[in-house]
Image 1 (cartoon, rainbow, N blue to C red):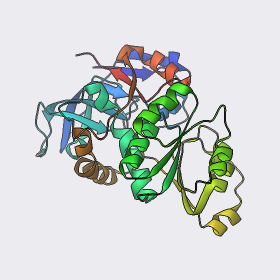
Image 2 (image 1 turned 135 degrees about the horizontal axis):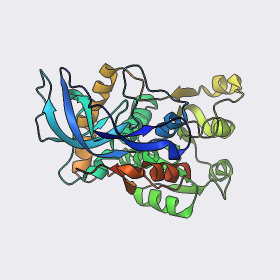
Image 3 (image 1 turned 90 degrees about the vertical axis):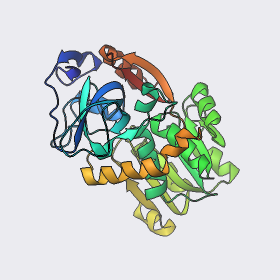
Amino acid sequence: MKAIVVDEPGGPEQLKLRDVPEPELGRSRVLVSVKAAALNRADLLQRRGVYDPPPGASSILGLECAGVVTQLGDGVRSVKVGDRVMALLSGGGYAERVVIHERMAIPIPHSMSFAEAAAVPEAFLTAFEALFERAQLETGQTVLINGAAGGVGSAAVQLARGHGARVIAIAGNGDKLAKVKELGADLLINHKLQDFEAVIQELGWPVDVVLDSVGAAYWPKHARLLTNNGRLIVLGLLGGAKVEVDFSVLLRKQLQLVGIVMRSRDLTNKILMTQRFISETLPLFEQGQLRPVVDTIFPLEAAAAAHERMEQNANIGKIVLAVAD
């Protein structure tokens, strides 16, 4: 089968379309013919050689995909050949075929395209876990979302608004802010033109939860903005990984500092998350209350161009690779 491989660690030019061995079908596993796969920043890190896949995972890039089930392994009961499914992956999405556990297969709503479906698993499962499992966001509380126009950010805006929370959305240009306003954000801040801390303090809004994709660079601002018992959920490190932390602030304000990563979790944990998503969140897509935000669709062989767009931080929502039949 064809897949995108990394010739050697480096820039987007290292991504090449090659023939690779077929994935092996095991018990309780299903073979999926991939129709679309979405990009994540973890893909960029792996391409650069600084984020290895977990033990046993495919070395092929790609942490989420959508496609059609074409073959069943022994013991499969919950999925059948021909089913349209999307899935969270530990790797392997940038390929014509991938093998997943049957309990990781998420049915694709009838109204959703493969490109839209590929943009759902990583973004919405991460956002749901961050907001409700870790941050315990409550109706009426305020959440600040950095990178609100990205995949996880745009998912979090929708989920938080649907839960009755007030949303402060931070992004880097007017087009991105216009999109998150459309998704329901209450306060829009362009971090390139405004000091988001000053704006929020002037309004006097208490911040209960911060979803942070920046990391070290914004720690001081987030610590000052969070109210007592506030929760800082770290999802990414675009602004660095190391910072001096004044623990007296955590103690005085009783803050919670939580990090989230999906890829390295064990299969049992991922199955539980997936099944909870199917029962609690998937119906909201079918009812039109949630929708994935797709930025651009590139053919699989143009993965390098797709990576370049993500590295430029030009995307609003998810960048998707379309896999030809």
